[in-house]
Amino acid sequence: MRPRLTAPRAPTDLIILAVLALWVLTVGLGLRDPWPADEPRFALIGKQIVDSGQWLIPARGPELYAEKPPVYLWLQAAAYALTGSTRSAFLLPSLLAALGTLVLVWDLARRCWGRRTAFWTTLALLFSVQFALQGRSAQIDAVLCFFTTLGLYGLLRHLWLGPAWRWYALAGVATGLGVITKGTGFLPWLLLLPYALARRWQWRGLPEMGRDWRWLLGPLLFLATIAAWALPILLLANQPGHEAVAAYRDDLLLRQTLTRYADPWHHHKPFWYYLAQVVPLLWLPLSFLAVLALRPWWRRIRRGDARVFM
Image 1 (cartoon, one colour):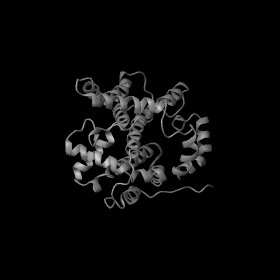
Image 2: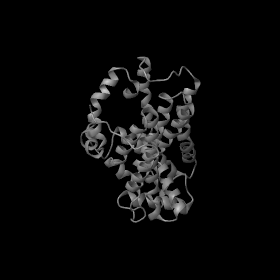
Image 3: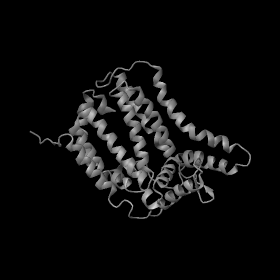
């Protein structure tokens, strides 16, 4: 017989996960200053937002800051407004995002495969190299990861355990916030492609949904969330005397988004770079465990298991 991993019983499993998460992600919090190159910039932009009261368009000194969408910078500002100290505030957005991601992963795994799987899945994520690094640094990626995970969580609560239209609607809001955090926040919606194939092939493991007007809620809320920020920018940019806002609009929406994807001016890497050179090392132990799981996954897919396929 194969050895079977066991997990602590409830609520000991949650206590262990909470203690380990706080140990990995919070040790040294408030004891260091922001490190170059990005952390000082983000922290100071957040401070300037609070000091100036200008929340709609973040600025770096006298210049509007168009290199990144504003959600992460708003969170930096909120953390500074809450603590009054740059040293105490600048890591809080990533910390809270990482903790939120762990909670979402644990809860979805528990609902789908039980507490034992949830415990080991969350533990593997917590000790993954890149996840721990991003959760302890003032970078956008941890916050983007949270909104991406929240979008996936809402979609899967609906597609796997539904119908759950409220969670589906929340996925629309979460992915919209993900886009305003970083342009790739829309990616959870690609999950609908394997879902549609699994439904067409009548694979097992998916609840009956049928045709319902509420399928429109997700995309509409996704667009509405983005529009709540983008429309004021577009309207202001068309007003006389706001040439700086027009330049901000063009730089953020065109150069930093469309041009960056179509004709990037930095980070020139082939399409396989991250799969071959980043994921194997920085996703440990998840990358190693994924290799071990390939054969079981393939067997489940051949049996028509829609959840594994998705």
